[in-house]
Figure 1 (cartoon, rainbow, N blue to C red):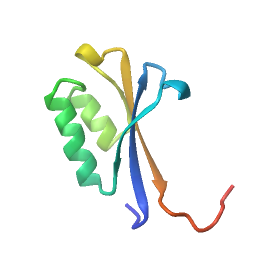
Figure 2 (cartoon, rainbow, N blue to C red):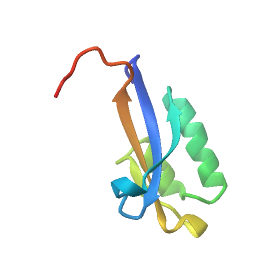
Figure 3 (tube, rainbow, N blue to C red):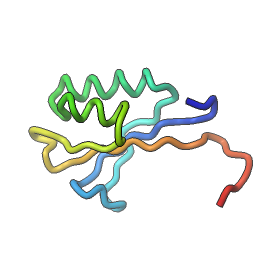
Length: 86
């Protein structure tokens, strides 16, 4: 992880459509993200596969149980960029 990188965790509908996304957390370390997603798993929002996908894999997973109509997505971005790269 880069020094100025942040991690964003979103919850949205099953398709993760832009209008459905809600920011659930902003994290500055992988360990902080892992602790939060482990709590999500402990509370039944995601399963072990989803936990792995958010932390080490594709960065998206579907919710389970009462969160079954939700999906979660992780994005990584630079904090305080100094140059436009578009």
